[in-house]
Image (cartoon, rainbow, N blue to C red; front, side, top):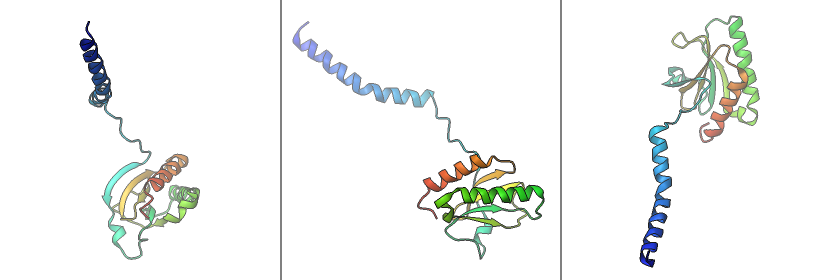
Length: 147
């Protein structure tokens, strides 16, 4: 084997070494699709008409309880909302709790509403407070410019 052939083989190996990560990433994207994000609450993508009413806290994240009648489950929910709010620590200043009766919204849980008035997450009654605290902390941390 001549020196010229050895040089060509080295060049081919270097090119293959550079192309290998691109090929591996394309193959993993093609045959191993991402599992998607994990969310504890139910993701929403709808604006809430309540956020357009006067008296709605502008520029703040809102924990909204839409129950009309407060039964024992509602009392537990409101207690959990207080705990979740308090557990946010320094970020609690960006978060407001609000109770507003609305028949168009689900009554069996509470909503996290962004500063623009969009419903972001819904947490049903019985949701584990520790998981909700962790998720809301993450939402507030990752959306630092909002509210």
